[in-house]
Length: 278
Length: 278
Image 1 (cartoon, helix red, strand yellow):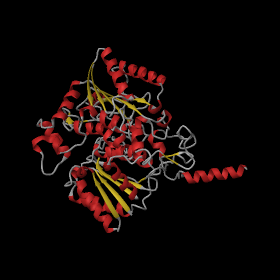
Image 2: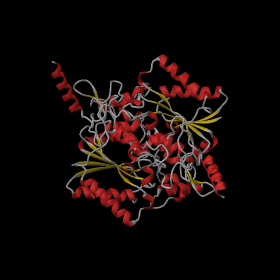
Image 3: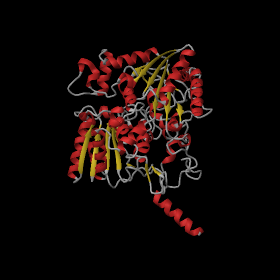
């Protein structure tokens, strides 16, 4: 396997730094290749601005349009192209960060903002002219894993914990970023109580991380629904017969035992239905 | 009223720039004072690092600890202190940004990461030694409004829309940031289809924004539950009798008709219960 490890912590001598070192050793031991984007060490620029777009910058900046144009014309700034090249190389992406304000630190948010531009990460069209998103798209076939640490206890992030269940708090990343661009979102690896981790707790954590990395290519991803799988209508609303009792972010994840159709199954079903009526 | 308007868009000559100008004019017309943090214009540094913490930086950086110490010792960098001073001055905060990857642009994420430090935004203790959070805390009594724009149509952000309902997608900000620090979270003001807005659509949008600003102090905030309101147990898990059928982020918002108790009502109820048993 080829793994890109994106690291967003200001301090190498930290719990997160130790976990990354252990993680990379484990990947090497398993015979996998890896590359690292250590965003703080790289001095990564997190802010989208006109400098990202080469010579073609206009008087009035339309961000999305400029990102797409500069990508097409190979005029995105060198740092952005380098990250896109690493993503293209990798089959699995690991994003490691401390959870700040229930999301990634700004330096990592800015990596998504600047690197996953239209034409590369999304906005890709399928052969039938449909835009490929949510389970299909520019990064389809890749897998993405979040490795994150929080000071809080696990109970607060449980199904009825006050902070919101961890998977739903991370929905903008897991569903809105990974799945949106086509990547399978693996269940996040979360270190709880990170400020008070004992020596024994650290050992348990590294052992669990090693196991997660060992099973990186066999772990079942989160069962999000495919945009083009037949479960959404033309307004991108879940059809009435799909999980009729659910609303909000919970509705977009198949429940235990429910297997959401993939886009291919849907097309196959459509073709079969067509042949039946003919 | 005193309003701090935090603006996170790289282009003043944009839909968002026009909306802010209209918004500020409206506030002035209503007789309110306002101050603006235009993060791109200020060249706001979004990245938390050792430079934030004055002379006291140590060999190994513990971010949370250093933020708290530097705040207490008035050693946070000047740009951070200036924002904290504006927040202290304001009774209402407006955060305006284009929704990128289902969250705020990095420059705004970094405003939260750097400005809302322990001791100021959170980690404040009440008279009984309990940490004040979720409905109480460093910024209690203030109100916060999100003004955001998305390219997508509204249906995709509805109760069963593919992107997740807007309020739940914004949960890390509305509940995890505003409510966590004590601020009442107002229903977000969202401009859908922002890339294709017609002249008539723009007129409707500015009219709607003016109305939202006119009712800024009377709009009912989102009915999130108070941490110290008696609905959560000592593990910060919702008690079994509260919305027993709900899990995930949806469980932390009272439903229509349900009025979650505030911390004061809870204490009053406790006092009454105590007097009954005596």
